[in-house]
Length: 207
Image (cartoon, rainbow, N blue to C red):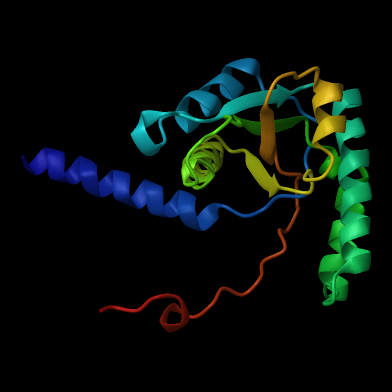
């Protein structure tokens, strides 16, 4: 029993370390991630909970540099459109990082796109349930990546361009993109953009 408690304590410390070590990485080494590791990331992502165990996620792992660059172009166009229309501009520091990043997505060797199937006549809560489950799966994947010495960056500027993305990836049917996740080895010496988190009392209330 004592040994089991010890193992649990060690596990908790490792999990805490992974949570605190996770940052959005926007510059990557020119080094491939092995297919075995990519498979393990997806397997561990798929252990996430989902409503009614529907497991709504579908992962498309982009390994082709030319496909990645085509997706980067789409993302860059959408980012520029959003940035030019929103009322509140990004800070100059964030703007500088974003403009550099969207040229080639930080040279990430892999981009994992997560889709879900849109069902006709689905109940109103279906989309919420699906996105909640997919968000859990992505968090699993990001923490698993940290444990393997990898960096990730959650990207979402695909909305509005789904038709182009599905054509590029040769995806048919009613699948819709929910999010993208860059995966690779962080560039040596790279310092992630660390932004201030809200105070605990601003995000939590005990009732």
